[in-house]
Length: 402
Image 1 (cartoon, rainbow, N blue to C red):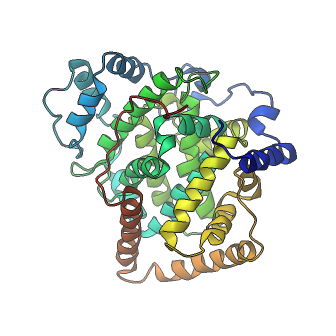
Image 2 (image 1 turned 30 degrees about the vertical axis):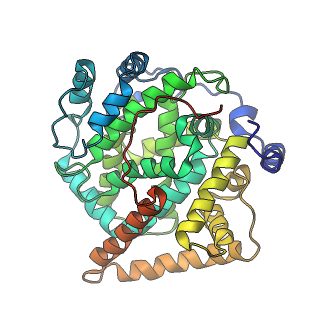
């Protein structure tokens, strides 16, 4: 951890002393969320902290141990579309896994998935902001996630790491997410394999101690920093959302959770169940770490450069991030307070939302809004990748030099 600066260590220490790390200061709570509230409607009720991915984990470990991953990555490079056949030459055990993992769950509802696509079309600005900036700031305030990112291979090149994460996030929000021509199934399956490889590799790192990383609970915590958090914020901003749209938005993320390897017995059936689960597991998993502060600094630096390259836009990004996640998380992440921008953002954003929502019902506005939001998404990806083609790949090492 020598590369973490003394300043960032002091920031984290100050936040820990002032706020307390919930995941450290609070005793671990028993798992009480009932599987009757899940899409499965039943289950063993096992604490998800001690459950991982029994199908992907041994496969990824085997691929790594026998040196097959580089060739697998090469063969899967051009595997992109949901309806695309797998390339020839893949190991038989991997083919068997992917053929099963790429199947949508029997409870997937095509009509709801289409409604979710329409909802994403008109609400892309909010969702990109909340899932990208807001979700990113929340993730760095989750100690296990921040450390897993920092010490895995992706932590050494955060632009590349964010670009690859964005491939999945943008795929979920795309109009063709789960259609044959979409990419969400492929990106989900690849991400599931990446998670399994990281579980295997991080346990070999001298900087990783304790439990096996990326448990079912860890994945649920991340899941709640995306759809659950986004829906709560949109309701807080009084964005008008129809019941069918709300249900559809939850559904596309329920399907995505399943595709990422989260057991159906842990996936909430309703928003009430999601909120109850989030309220139980987020507090016990959040708090400050030096790695989280370091990653936040990198992420906000990237955001400032994307927003206005070459300008002094970091204070604005700091204020926006603080507004999205609140003071406690912002302090844990070491985000500076901005005396000018903080009150301006908190005052102006609700007015912007009301102005924008006044325009949404007008003809063609949702389509125009989607074009603008999609252009922003593509710009972000182009900036992060420096215009180079980027794909989700299975790692073969941890962070170099750690």
